[in-house]
Image (cartoon, rainbow, N blue to C red; front, side):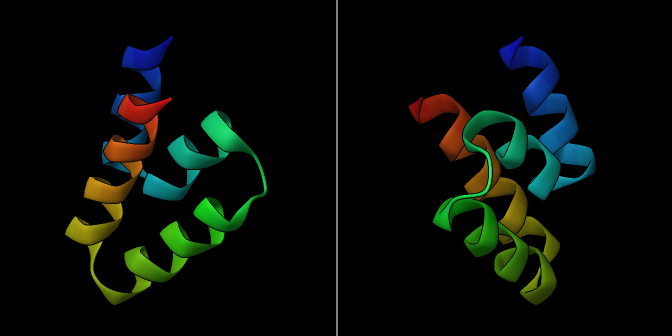
Length: 52
């Protein structure tokens, strides 16, 4: 399941974070990072998935 989340995080970072933690501060932070730049959003999403 984590592999699927990582793949989804590369395609759409907030979706991967949402599947891992739901509507938390990490989800909204990831949306902000993705808006500011795609790469920071992907890095944050993969980090959240690897951490859990």
